[in-house]
Length: 516
Image (cartoon, rainbow, N blue to C red):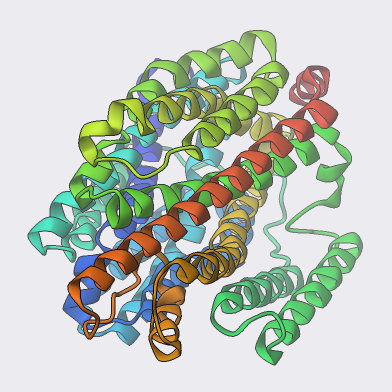
């Protein structure tokens, strides 16, 4: 397919459709975290129920996103993109009408299937359709606009949550998705690998889906049942075996969905390692930061969402510039310095202790958020451009699928593994600090039983008012201790991502790959 200029009418419509569809998925993911208290009350959901509502979508996305990228390359990027959008808005509508937790979890899985077809299609369409010398700028523009709506998600979710209208975070996807479908139908031409024989790697697709699903399920069960439970070690073992089988199948297949030759390019391997470590740190940090604000520091859900506006503004101002800079100078320096800066921001945030509420925001959370936002602004567009630039155009969907799968697996790691560690950290801090409060054995057991709820731990109503105040302070101090440790681990993961860029990302490799 012939490429088009970014400023041409065709280029603008391609970018508009990609931004609209991506925004739909990103708003949904960020807003849901904020409305969980309203959702829990409305559906009488337990803590475990909430965990599965959050991760049912992630399970399907991590398992199927590589298939989505490969399908787009072989059958048509526009076609698969549109099918994914349609499934996503159907799933969103069903989520909005779900009368109970079980049906909501099932509908979230439908959303995940749609997302797996939709998410890799957006960047693949840009990479295969926009002229090579403008792709970084195009991806930077995509990154800036999607970041605005993504980080607007918590604000929107906070407003809906405070008003008791949590279902509208699902319903809002419908008009956005319809607009994206209309643009694609009327204004965007089909893009596919014309040299492909259109044969799907069904054995590989099945094996990778089952392998990632097994690993994802195993990790998600760790916080609930522990590492020694048979459900965990059997599914993790099965996942490893299936992924090994996938690699073997791909090495023998004449039409592999994930050509192993991609990983002979050190830059492609390096940026995926960077993605894994950086987004694991990002996922954990962005999970515990709003929990700390709302459950411990006294912020409302809306106030918590608004605190990320400086991050949003930085992404708007800097993402397109970072993409253009990567086009001119190469991404290596940005992919080293950006994650270092992001890690420094997370480290600064880890030192926030008990505050006096939202009034202290500017001298507590704001400095770390600014540094963190600057780091991510310099990283996102060059990272995405590097992933797409490491491969030839006909493999762009596959490359996007691999990188998106790595991102989702990193999120699994952050939510499940660091979540399990957080419970252990909280329990340990609680056991240490409870010695300072005069309680009998039964009362201590009642307090410790709430450790699994972290910052949402409930104070036993049978305690007198002075003891309740002491327990509340104890819970808050313990959670702040957990928050600090998780944020420092997140910072370490970001620094490790920067190290991967230093070791593997090479500007010459990208230029050479683009030329072939």
